[in-house]
Image (cartoon, rainbow, N blue to C red; front, side):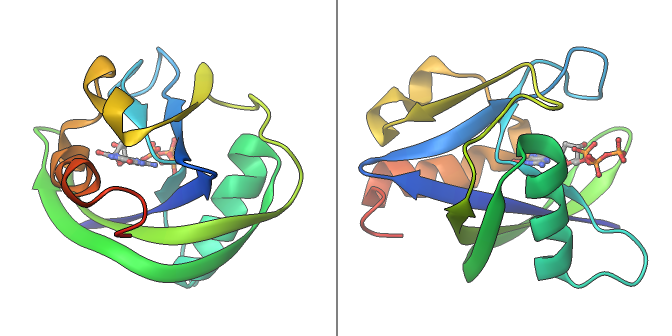
Amino acid sequence: MTEVVAALLCRENRFLICQRPPHKKRGLLWEFVGGKLEAGESQAEALIRECREELGIEIKVGKKYMELTHIYPDITINLILFQGEIIQGEPQLLEHKDFRWITVEEIPEYTFCPADKEILSRLMEFGLQGS
Ligand SMILES: Nc1nc2c([nH]c(=O)n2[C@H]2C[C@H](O)[C@@H](COP(=O)(O)OP(=O)(O)OP(=O)(O)O)O2)c(=O)[nH]1
């Protein structure tokens, strides 16, 4: 099983979503910034590295929001979503096709990676305050 970490980054009543590049698996689907752990990394270290590499931001990793397992035809992932706070920088498109700060009401307008379904349901039910 492949461990994937991701970040729930909030600003006012919005949170950050990123669109995967077209050439990658699950291309053009929306996701939370993050990626696979590299050998020897802790979850927090991997998440900090991914945020730096993908968006050029420094984050502080907070509480775990949700953890789930999802089986794709090509890979089984254990996805761990952490709350996070941007402590430096503004997101830049270093790897993604696009990013947006959206409200929970706007979630249905986007097609996310299938593994994120439960996370998005929780956000729609409880809102960002409930996170
Ligand atoms: N970052 C992220 N990945 C997700 C989410 N939901 C979801 O199914 N995934 C999947 C997509 C990918 O198959 C996998 C993450 O791998 P990745 O390809 O983005 O990771 P990476 O940047 O470390 O990739 P690479 O070295 O294999 O190119 O997890 C999510 O919300 N965020």
